Image (cartoon, rainbow, N blue to C red; front, side, top):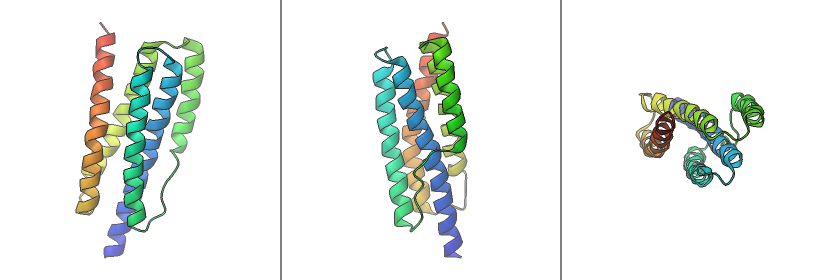
Length: 152
């Protein structure tokens, strides 16, 4: 019985790692797109914060004896191509960038919330996810607030 719990923990963590790596990539792209604009530094610091989340989740997978996910999702690759194409077309439009970032934030927040609703996770893993989620939620709420402030 313990084995299946561990493998469930590992696959859940690896799913969150892939999503969080997508988020790091998204923020890194957004920072490039906004350049020296007012959001560049914010995006960079969020990317660093998410890298920290990735490494905490990866450490847990390692300690459970799992193979650590170190890549984003395939879907995100397609999303990045779309982002790059779009930024080439819109030419560094802050509002467009914020909209993209905020959509990514909705996605990662939902992934973490799904994981937290998973009753099969071990308490240790749930606690870690909960702790990482508070960082994710802060980032999400900040982007949501910026988006709303730009709609005025």
